[in-house]
Structures are given as structure tokens and as C-alpha cells.
Image (cartoon, rainbow over all chains, first blue to last red; front, top):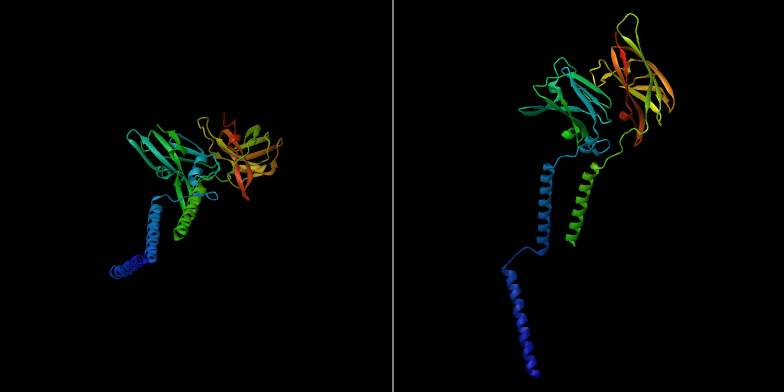
Length: 183
Length: 162
């Protein structure tokens, strides 16, 4: 009985010895990167890929333009209010809110479609130009314009806000505009 | 361990980016007139200036609201067809206040119940007069001008050779 146990123990030792030898052999034959280097490489690649995707996405998304101590101009556009009318070849605009209107775009609607231009482009040569710094609260603007055959004009306000580095213009949604009939 | 550190760092970075982007959509304090600001044109009179085609406009205002008024915008129309009053006459003020901008600043605040008289001269032919009260409001430590468009009052005066 004792002898049988001794033989089995010897066999087990031999097997273990051979296995250790095999592992050493395998390590010598198949050289590879250590687990630490592999982890570092993997993390590095993930970070680099993340940065690339982030930069790419940043270029695709619009830059936030803010005004009045960091409020997005998109929300400020909802507060813009002005009156406008067209009579006798001229357009009259009054800014009714405390949000300055930097510029005005005009969407000229005719039976053939529409085109959008800055109001300045429609102002006749000898008429008053749009104020350089825009229309402040309760400021008014009157000028003779060339309607280019349009039947209706949608006046769309443009606000000036602060971009990441410079001042930037932002055109409000058409819903913030005002439609006037010209024909 | 490194995985946890990275995961938490990513979460923090993403949180900061989203916070900075979203905070711009939170409305800030706006310059607004309180409800209850109101003025009333008690009397308006137009006189021809001797020896010319120009006119002198006298305007008597009463504050019938619940707040002090610091000034007002005053614009006129020249014809009945003109719907929007676009002609600013604030610079033509000769008594009752001054015109530092496109508005009349009162020499003294017009408190509720107070009356004040103003004269504008010389002005051209006028059909109607529009008055919009304004007040100075403090927003985040800055004094800003607030126009009270909701309290606009309009009166027909007809300064013309008729």
C-alpha cells in the first residue's frame, strides 16, 4: 500500500516536472508582449481613438453662441420682438424688446419660390442704411427698398453673440421673424 | 484598477462637457418691466411756431401705474396712413427732461400719481404720438434700460395746417 502511494507520488512529480519544462519551452518559442504593455497599448489606443472621434464630432456640431452673460442666442431669439410694415415703397421696423437686433435678413417670397438676403442688399442707394450697431430697444428704422418682385417678405432678425473666440452672428428661426405683405 | 480610473475620468469629462453646453440654454435674468407700469397722456397740445412750418408739442403725462418711471420713448407718425410710429422726437425736447439716447430721461423720477409736462420743438407735421415708459433696472449688478412696451400709449394730435 505504502509502495503504491510512493509510485503515484513519483509519477505526479514527473508529470509536474515535464509540464514546467513544457511551459518554459513554450515561453521560449512564442515570444509576445507582456500583459502590462498590452494593457497600456490598449488604453492608449482607446484614448487616441476617443480624441479623434471627439474632434470630429466637435467639428460637426454647431458652436454655442452666447449673449447676456452666457445665455444661448437660440433662447434669446424667442424673446426678440419687433413691428414691421411696408408702405409706399418703404419698410419701417421698430425693435419692441430689450434684445438688440444686429442685422435683418429678408426672405423674399414670390410665385417662383423664395430667396433670402440681408435687408441691406434691398435698400435703395440713396436711402438710410441699417444702423451699424443694429437696432437697440425701441429704435426704429425706415428705408425705401427694392422688393425684387416679391409678394411677401419675411423679416428674420440676426443677433450678435459671443462665440468661443470672437463675436459671431446668429440668424434666428423664421418663427422669430415677421411677415409683411408688399404687393 | 486602471479601467475604473479611466471609466470615472471619462464620466467626469463627459459630464463637464455636457454641463458647459447645457448651461447656455438656461435663461438668465432678463431686463423686463414689471407688470403695473403705466402712464397716461393727460393732455397733448400742438402749436404752430411763429414764422415757420414747424410745430411745438406739449405733452402732459401722469403716472397711473404702481412703479416709478425713469423716462419714456416718444415717437410720432406724420400721416393717418402710417401705422407704426417711427419718427423719434426725443432729441427735440426743450423742457421736462433730457435725451441721452433715443429716449427722454426725466429730471426727476415720475412716481405713481405724479404729473409732468414736456415740450418738444421744433417738430414737423404730426398725426399721432406714441409714448412708451421706460425704467432703469439692476440686473446682476449692472444698471440696464428696460422699455415697457406693454404700457404703450398712443394719442392723436394732428399738428398740421388744417
